[in-house]
Image 1 (tube, rainbow, N blue to C red):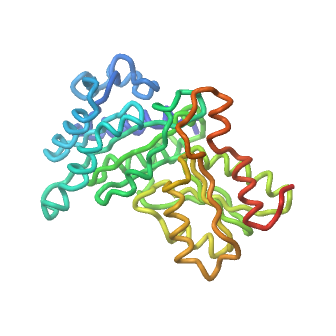
Image 2 (image 1 turned 90 degrees about the vertical axis):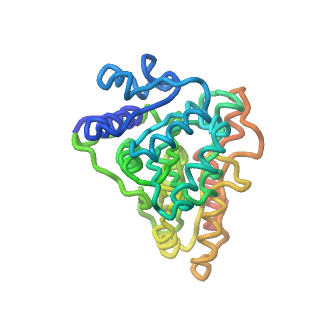
Length: 328
């Protein structure tokens, strides 16, 4: 099987969908000749031409608005917002238009729009280019929200997002683009709304998203050396959420840690903790532990950024708290 990076897996999903369906096209800032700020769409202009790989003005509201209009007319646009921080400029279109039209039309209108965006810390981009805002979008009925952590998942989930008849906000983490994995030549769609168990365990469940999936897997290896068996669950789709998979894992282990890069206050992990506490209360042997960034804008200085965002050591500490240990 060929080895693809996370970046190449995104490109493969986009290219495969565009070869299969003339209604799929791309819009975004500098995505054509430049190939996008993260190099995801490099080479796609040459294959598909400027009608289907469209550079846009620097106006996130216009990009998403045009995508909504095209989607309601039967196309399947994939629009790119260069940094997820800039989603804030398009929230009127995403929240008040894309998320509402199917409901307000009684199902007569469909909005098969995919909004791709990337972000995250770990490379010192500063406070305005490193936020993790996925919880904002999960709060909105009518949207689907996806956050893959591996090349296989990003390829399969992006395909499923493009062919979903509802608007999907698709988050990618900047530091995962170089992550490589062996993948089959044939693209395998991953259904939206299904979690993935990356590692089975018996003593504690870690529910992690994005980059923190890999930090959690590293922490699980260290914990195992101390006799603690850790199960790592990646929701992959944040909305709709696979509550059954998460709750089932916690009922097996009786302990839960939730981990994400976003700040803990009102973060996605708070919803996971609420779901677990409500549906698995009688099985819990310890409070749900939460791991996330400190409640501050992301600093530019690398040493300060490292201090603010969570890493595998923070997940490991939460695992030990959950099982009632002080560490190795």
